[in-house]
Length: 75
Image (cartoon, rainbow, N blue to C red; front, side, top):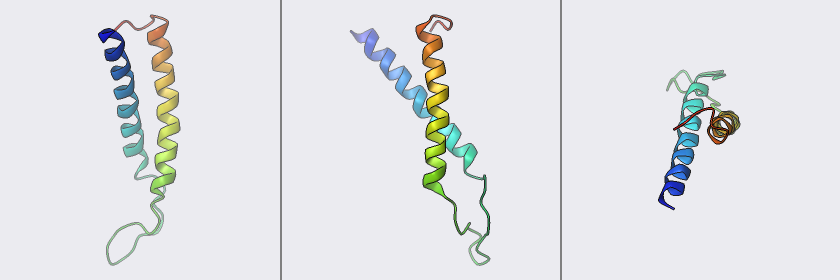
């Protein structure tokens, strides 16, 4: 029972880490025009980037999960 909880926690944390890495890699992409006073981008599209990061993380996580379930990777 505890092993199952640890396995689930490992997979959940792996998804969070993959999302976090994908999100921070996407942050500087497509910033466009910059406000001359503050230096901040006028349209950063944070929600769009978070959604794209979610899709990237889901693909990587599902691949990671399949490799663990099929015992290609042994943890």
